[in-house]
Length: 238
Image 1 (cartoon, rainbow, N blue to C red):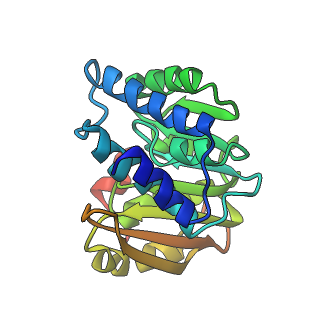
Image 2: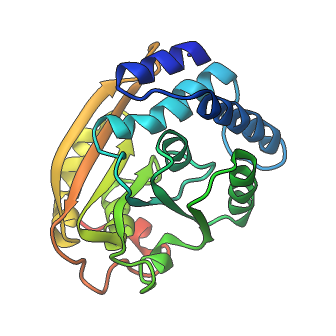
Image 3: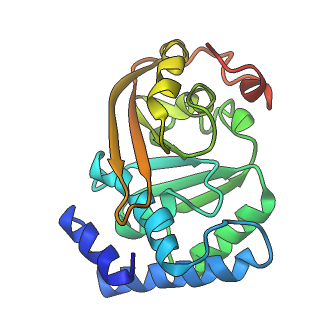
């Protein structure tokens, strides 16, 4: 979608962008493409595709959850900043913590934050398994998010330990999600979560199916989770 369509589609959902915010998205795009020549951040670089499949796609989380409050969100495996940085541009009030396992991406995100002139963002180079066992971050976040990082049972083990009791884990996934979710129900329950809702929809301009799962954190995650780095992916919880 072009920038005008992007702006109009968000306005239809009650999100009105200022000239400053529109400029921030433009700077985001330019910085992403520039850095993508040095490090692998995304396979999508055509402008209208970036606006649809990265920027708009990231913001769809706000169509189903309230980001107008002063909440602290943790984005696990954000890569080039999706979904949390587009959400931060739209909702400057939120506080964002990003954890990613690749230092090059963290370097990019620090540069991007400076270019966008945003505050209230923190970036950590760490494995999600170790981050989730760090007392400074475990049980601390109102919302924990992940976008297309891993299978749902694996994501739940990485994300639910970080979420406050009473908070929300938001998983943003592609097509054919229902069978994946069904296979992960036991893991979600074990880790202290409860499925609240799943929203299935199509991105504009035939850009594909998306699913957003909202998981309530009902109780604290058992201390032994997440397991050691690499174990959740090799041996997902049933």
